[in-house]
Length: 294
Ligand SMILES: O=C(O)C(=O)C[C@H](O)[C@H](O)COP(=O)(O)O
Image (cartoon, rainbow, N blue to C red; front, side, top):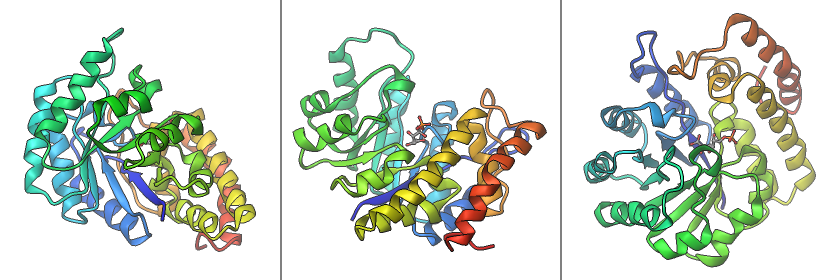
């Protein structure tokens, strides 16, 4: 059964600290609404902006709600990533994950392979690759993942389903998730293992319903919902999806997740008004379809 995994938003207070109470409330709501796992310290969670101590703080807070956690530990200091991987032994979680070392240009492939192999050597849990070429500038594709040889799974954020299917083709034992919200219906129809969907932060009901409809082979209904979801994703990108996620969660789920962490700035009042105006009609359709309550 393919899963919906939420790369959970990290709420911040006005003085730029993690808002633990808001994070707890959000995690509880997602699990209650049928989300299968929570991906902590991902892109949507502004993982690259978090210190190692903050990454661990996020894990502790979410762990008090559920142990269905994939704990992202990666960064540009491998010692920190290794320390976090080792500290995760105290938590009975699904696994750890890491994106590739970002920013540094023209890194030799052998160094990328060494980075992940060193994480695998120390990890007390299964290790997941978080592949996001647009964000990191590195594509740890299926062939390289096979050469690294120690991944339990991969989250492949790329809007190219062949690239993602290749992981399953070359590494049949790996769990393969797409990191794209726009491929939920597709993934559920292809035998892959699910989606890590940023939009499931603000519409867990919709993302779970798309998956279920696709699994029931109600493809027309699944695509109808998928396309409504896609419209919201597109609207979020106009204003910056990482900032819009906070506004959309408040609008669709009814609770405030505080602020993002600069340089991911909050939307201003006018941007927020425009975003809501773009999605309010879709919300009405979701209520009509009884996916959302009034
Ligand atoms: O946030 C995470 O950690 C995720 O896993 C979800 C996706 O990787 C990113 O949200 C990418 O979003 P887009 O590039 O806008 O499709």
